[in-house]
Image (cartoon, rainbow, N blue to C red):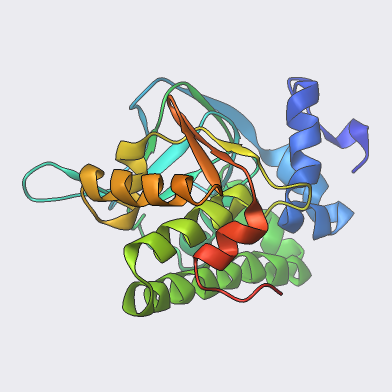
Length: 240
């Protein structure tokens, strides 16, 4: 997009990041410019909530650095992590479309910066430019397809296969990255276990099994992906 549309507060890394997201890159110049013009920076400390379940919608967001845990709290206070939103990923389109409250908490996993486009201003702009509702709907549909795929994985794949596929999806930003996939995931095993709905011990055992096959290397605080093609083979998913 035209550099003049990007706020001066954006670092060079953030500017590059915007172009790496497939959805944002494919959006029209008019929509991209509106998202930049109407948005504002939100800086969060570790474990600070961007929003909470049941809270009124506050617009469309994109993580610029850090990460967010999309979670639900269980009755005993423990977390159930549904997703780990990393830099370049846009979210918040469901509440933007239906106007209903947030369905889950979004909590900063360490210091995090988010670009937030407030709901009232964005809705007003979309009412005046209704043709741009289509890409908003496409963003929601892409995530719905992903959710159906994950439900199918739970029913059909063993834990090692589900883990391999989830790592592959994280490397590709759940299909959102238009640039090269990540070679290293800065994802603690505790968070990965929560995302898969298993114990840390079970997640660690599956990680070590994949490591023994030479497709990943478990590092302190992260996971190095050594062979993405073989990682998908380990998931039992035919390569495209």
